[in-house]
Length: 60
Image (cartoon, rainbow, N blue to C red; front, top):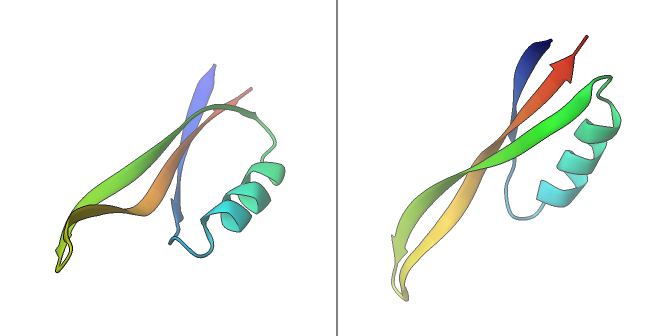
């Protein structure tokens, strides 16, 4: 079995819609979705953001 790893750029406003559209367009089976979480520091304190998602797809 072979695997493909896709990178999907997202932000907090469009993450759900972009992920849904991307997953519906895949031909193989989704194995995992990994978010890249980046820590950020703002006036209110430490928080985090998701910059992109890595999607692992199994293809035949």
